[in-house]
Length: 266
Image (cartoon, rainbow, N blue to C red):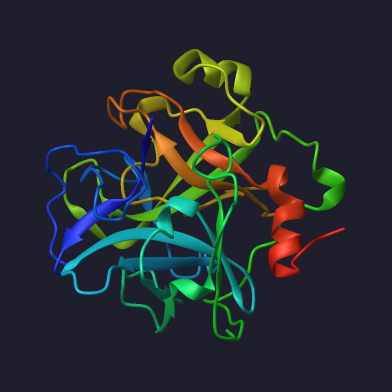
């Protein structure tokens, strides 16, 4: 498995660099492809997604990732996106890092799951943000309700979106999305070994997948749009080879989200 952040230098990146460590430090990530063989999103398709520019004090390097608006003052993302000093959050535009507006949030407003990174399935984090007004292009997405906490969503169709290098090796300036079908953990374990309930996987036929730079972004069901996954990891041998794409399962963390943000659905 490998985490799916993309490291940039001074905002100018190559999507063809050598692979480096797969630890969660924002200064150690694989320049790689992102949403592969997906499609450009139309304006307003995913008003809940935000672009994260993940920065370190005193460094000219940054990593890119994504997050999901779940309330006026909360963004949900992957824990491995929050090991740095601050993030610039860009809202309301399909252009990467060029939102309608942005907020700079420092790490005293980051909350990472206390069991990450020592226990698989807990790659989840929250960012406490300034208040954001909702519009047609900036809006939250619903979490699963507590009545759905045992729903596995197997064979449901969902959409994942993100920014970064594409299958052609070029960075995507415009938001890309891909429609993928959720699979069982038993099926996914054939690629990655035994998986805890906190992980959710999707099938990636035809090279359609999430990939490097997509970390922290949303997986949202087609029917009754609901956030069911947070982009977390992919295959170490490449994103277009058909191995499952891995997400943190949101239903496994509803109590944690409620305890730390107050956001919950009943």
